[in-house]
Length: 419
Image (cartoon, rainbow, N blue to C red; front, top):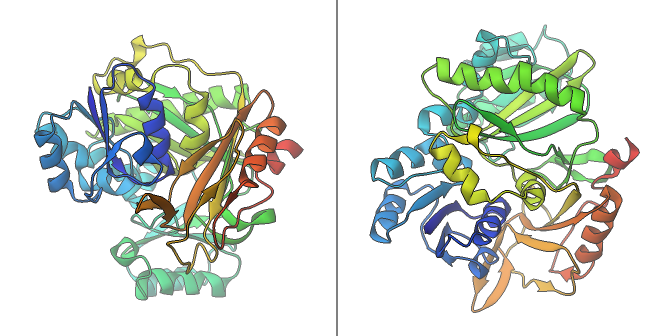
């Protein structure tokens, strides 16, 4: 089979690596791909958001199956365009991708179908939002409605911070049209859990749970990022909590999307918080998380292509999906200055990484040399019989990789070990 992956990050590298293990895959393409994906697939110079060009390429190159892996192409309707051209896809169509593309849509869905989440109000007028901030509980959470590269969420500890966030999002348009509306949300506390799930619109199969580390610096200090590292499984997510979430959150969400006329097929990501009052949905994503994919997929025993086809063909219930009884840790190596200003084009040197795997995120090939090309550059993933073993192997590999300005958090997994 000829497979096309849309995207260029560490998540896409993880998907490419898993698909490349299938004997049924004859040729892998990635558009646009990156320096690491290029070792597994033919990289095509087409932006993941250029849906028309992507469709034309897929048709011209006899693509048998496509995987739009990133949020932007999914929300723009990549699945609709490709499937209308006769190319089956893994991923939600444009209508279903609203669950990530609009936080207002997802919050209203949860309210309508009694899916537990934080209390909230929606505003499309900055003056009204600012007036509400005079009386709402503090701390509070301000969210841009649309896609904002995982950075459109601001936790405001004071009223002044909340007002500044609304002005930044709605008036200064820091995130462009994504900030035309904002959600002002109740601030919740508790351990966070990421649960990715396979779903064909009827059946939902949760994957191994994980714990992301969003802040840029050790001790959960610094600015919010797209994710600085992740471990799996998440020790706070017990078997009892897993059963409760499937009954009260996962299955009701799939049923709600079907009832709304936009059944969800693909990978639905549940961002949860385990509050004193019980689990609550913090966010939905319409695709694999990044870097969550980099720890979850290495623990998967069942062939990823088999799962993708079962989802696309709505026969997921007939498939037995199994996982390794191991732990995984991914440490992100980022460019100095990330998540704000940073430089690119620095050569990357990879030494002995032992049993770890180096996922490329922000890299590209220049004259046969891999150089930095983004904020989050590499994701170093190791698996082990214990979480401590996985963490130790990941950091041992990190210490043998260099590029100018590289930095990483040194405490990935410590909260989980302490638990």
